[in-house]
Amino acid sequence: MKVVGVSLFVTRLPLVHGFETSSHRKSHLDHILVRLTDASGAVGWGEIASASDPFYSSETVDTALLVARKYIVPAIIGHEWETPADLATTWARIRGHEFAKAGFDMAAWSLYSGMRNEPLSVTLGGTRTEVAAGVSLGIEASIDALLAEVSRHVDAGYRRVKLKIKPGWDIEPVRAVRAAFPEQDVHVDANGIYRDTDETTALMRGLDEFSLSMIEQPYGPRDFVAHASLQAKLATPICLDEGVVDLDDIGTMIALGAGRILNIKVSRMGGLTVALAAHDLARDAGIPVWCGGMHEFGVGRAANVALSSLPNFSYPSDVSASEKYYARDIISPPVTATDGMVTVPTGPGLGHEVLAAWITENTITHEHYGEER
Ligand code: OSB
Ligand code: MG
Image (cartoon, rainbow, N blue to C red; front, side, top):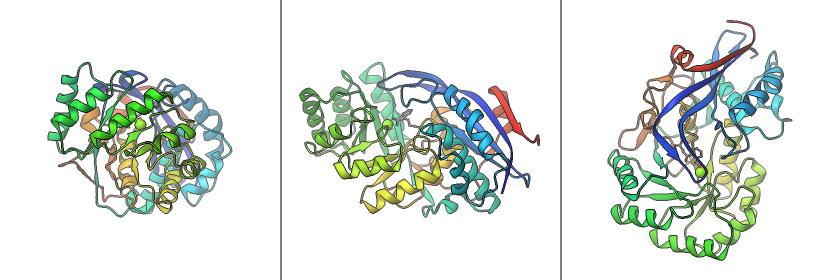
């Protein structure tokens, strides 16, 4: 195969419900949609789901666009490839910029699976026909507002609820949610805001009594040692998110005991090719994984669903229905969840139609390289 044309669309969609984490609040997202055109005329879509600001990772929409335009597009146009992993070798020498790479890697996988006429999940080696969906709930203005959000999503059947926490919004919301939903699978995500102090250790130990499934990324991305020392003092498993951007990080996590569960995000790890290797590495080390999200539009969301169909994705993923985020998604049909389960599509490629006209309508900037098709 050979990519002869690349289109990059910076597309904006408003969020149905504003989202606040320990670092910031957002009400709309700008993601970069990547469309690759093969010499045969077949196309593949990917999504660069970077945030606009460098508060989750060091990347932004602007850095991703720059790296895409200046380094990735010139490397792939005209390059002959057999498998997505082959194409990924063209950008392997670029250090970092995982979100930018992920959009291209995802587009290569959707193109490849579509040309093989098989669902992306099958091409990836997935075995599930449906995947369990969790929901990630942001920090709310009050505990009552949070309880209302939890209630709405528990009623919708979501299999797991994740609560964002930060200093001053941790024990109390968890206590309130646990009291109202004693049986619900609940976990918390700090997005790396806590510092390694005796006070934090006491706080985290205090969370043990609420039988949370895990505490996601309490400390900063590079703090493997602090995570290991905290994990040794906790009954609740620690899950790493921001801290793991490549396979070496998984090795460090395992060697130090810095966590017992891994959140695999396609974007954070630079694409499906790396995510697959991460899945296998974690499986061999006895570490369960689940698929995290970046509020993806439908293209990235469909890729997350396909990835979540692999066997070691054994905890509900952040693959909520499109409608939780967007009034109208960029794919048809949108991703839906019934009783907390998302059906893995059986059509070729992403298994959803990509709504090009709707993308164009919501696009802020569009650039094209190579042949016009
Ligand atoms: O830490 O998992 C995270 C969203 C943006 C940035 C970081 C995170 C998240 C989420 C939402 O938790 C997951 C989703 O529903 O896509
Ligand atoms: Mg997280």
